[in-house]
Length: 378
Ligand SMILES: Cc1ncc(COP(=O)(O)O)c(C=O)c1O
Image 1 (spheres, rainbow, N blue to C red):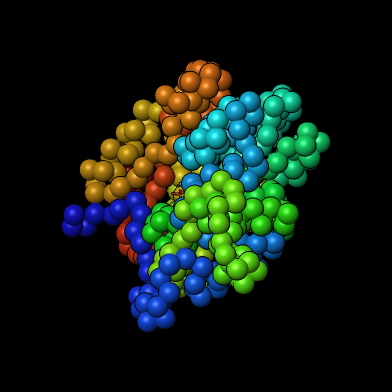
Image 2 (cartoon, protein in one colour):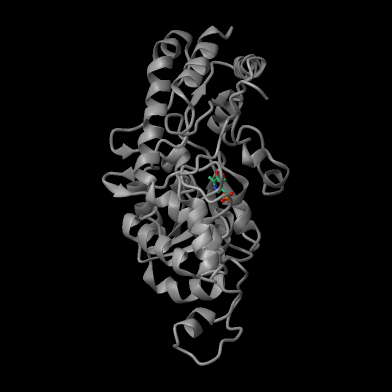
């Protein structure tokens, strides 16, 4: 629609098409080609991981994590109630019971103070989500997990290039997962990565990602035939998508810098309004560096939030809510979730709005969004 401001817009960095052409010219369009190798090495270096494997999505990297940790019936997995379906579904697929943890009211991240009460002898993993790319309290989470002999899988879908106490997000858990979905800072349309920090998990991760075969070993010349050796599925990203992703990764500094400008302009423009109107803006603890993944506001009431979204829509500005409380979803209720279990999640979910956020949002367009927010009746 003319003059409309979408919530998200893909911003190609430039060489995406040329890279894809080069993958075609090089006759390697399936997985594990030259672009995949470049992306994986680059990400491993940036995060400080033992190994990175590109996958078809963050959802699939989470499913790989569940397989790698041998999660099965009788096991419990702790996830925040304020998250995307995949954080829980990947483990439910293996037969685990999902245990929902409420989130902190400041960062909207899993509330680490609840973990001791939620852990049981059946707990197999904790899956903290770095909401908006702002780090969870990883020091406490990792300590609690270590004491209980429980694995940590960081769902870092939002948090590539974020940091906690000087250490990259994605480097704390035995495993971490990234998303390169179109809505993320760095994208290839649909894609993800499994970050492996516990190097003992690498050989099986390669097998699980290759349909349960030892094809990776075969390609390296370590075995003369490959065969079915374990459970697995088809989680390998095409090198065509990796070619796109490589263009984005090479432009990461420029992308991140532009996103910082957009985030800071929103903060500056809305700070006084928020203070005067009892609206919450993102809280970034001083020990966290954020990757400027999203900008949100928490309105005083659910009615005010819905009213603001409608007010912006009338002005052709597309602002959106975020996660519905997962423990109150159809599946969440099957796992025993009920109203009142996670009061912060239930409250925040009804009051949070995300504003249009992408690199090619022009200063004029952003000013239009800010003015429309300031004029909205609360
Ligand atoms: C926290 C979180 N985890 C996982 C996912 C799934 O990512 P993907 O679409 O790459 O599977 C999302 C999607 O946005 C998400 O927000």
